[in-house]
View 1: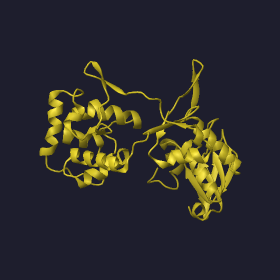
View 2: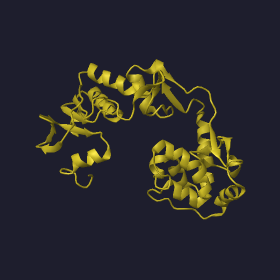
View 3: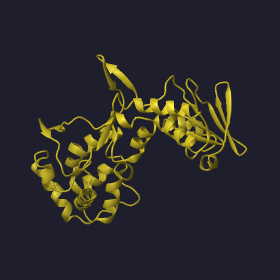
View 4: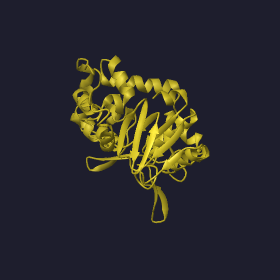
Length: 295
């Protein structure tokens, strides 16, 4: 991938979802020549604007984390800075135990710092199980651990099933009992490695956030929808001289001397570096010949 680090050469990006477009945008900023190949007839991937009953809405993700710099910074770089908006003031609730109950405070992605934080949301047995966390010996998380398994072992399944699973499962479209703690909640993973109990780890994170003065919005949207972000990035890529080809599925990816040969229909492109930004099944097929372990 030396071409991207030196800012020279031709970079081919396979996939025009927001990941591929962001990679193309970064490569162009470093001076590379860029070609983006997209199998479908549009850019944006999972980010898709649309209309329901005449109202413009997002048909994919509808917000981005305001406290992470990557997406917000990209939006500003492509001219959407004045359209960034926090969600309208509203309160979140959880339907549990046959009632709609206010979303509790004092938790990190559903993992509480005290049993009291989930009072009213869990049963008496569930709250008592959280308090047992302080009595349990430390749990070694190692290189990684499944979120649900770890939290259930420390605090019981009720915390996972009533709060962690709905929050994480919705965000990551996965099973909390199989999701990586290190990937899904990295700050909690790091805190868990240095604290004897899970409640202590959560309270340490809360104290750190308070000390840092994180009082701004957690999420930001874009006026007109987050689905407009990849469209704006694509416009910026084209304005900088990048080429985006839709309806151009890649059928083969092969090493070619010091570079790569990319076959897309009747086109054969030669690249100094390739970014594969497609879903796992498509990536596996493309990488099978040259990177069988990754495939």
